[in-house]
Image: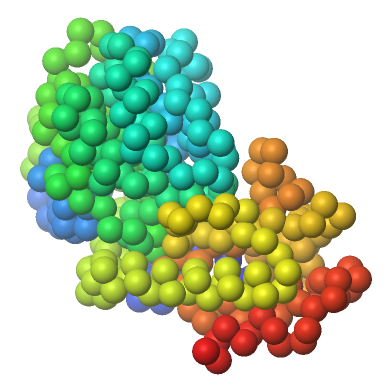
Length: 382
């Protein structure tokens, strides 16, 4: 099977030393020696997210981390609110409704930034909200949320802040303690630069106190933070989780996290911003628009909008067939209108952006669009 370049919104290509670490011999998933490795990995996550709270790692995808976070904080149907500004923000509402929970919703037009003033007005006029859930980096639209500013509002109002950072953690700086983020859900395969397979949930002290004292038990078992917390407490030195841990995934995550901290999160953030700017400038030079015109865009992904006479899925297929590069079609109402190009971790490099821009020029020409040859690459010469 031919290896294709993964420029989708995750998972992304993984560094060789991370893969080598994952290739170690399987070890027992419990015992004091193993727990040292597991706890070292958790401590690296604590450094990355700047949290003095708890970190839980469980076999699963980012959806498991998000679902666990929501269920832990949604005791009554009208006590949790969701900011609905994209496909994955709306997915949180869908998850809650499967448990017969109907959150209050602040609707934001897709592609628009979430303004802190909107959030404050919403919380002022919506009584009884104890938790606000929000997506940090919405990969359906390319918009980034100003979590720091929103965290200041929720902290003043005594509202817990739950953040879906599945794509942003490891690329965009996150300061849970400093920003007032009470829970942060992420996963191994995107900004953290490891293979898929691990759900990660960081929880601050106030959030854990809420979960421990809630009157109603959290429903379910696997996505139940009360279960995770019980094993983490009762079996701390031997097996601080309720399942057979994917030990080789932990090996990989441990190495990828160390690589991130060695690079420096600020330096990593600036690298991703630079490459995202190059990608977007090259795309616009070809006459294709960036979907969101907002000031605050996520550096992990570029969402480009095609003319009405071109189905965006055709460009996805073109890159796959002619360049062995995988990008993604739009989601929801943006399917057929947009493409989503991930540039995360190892893939945030000029060598990966150049063939996409060349492919875009060629594709547009074959579809009767006037594009000056090489115009998209001029950005690299400036």
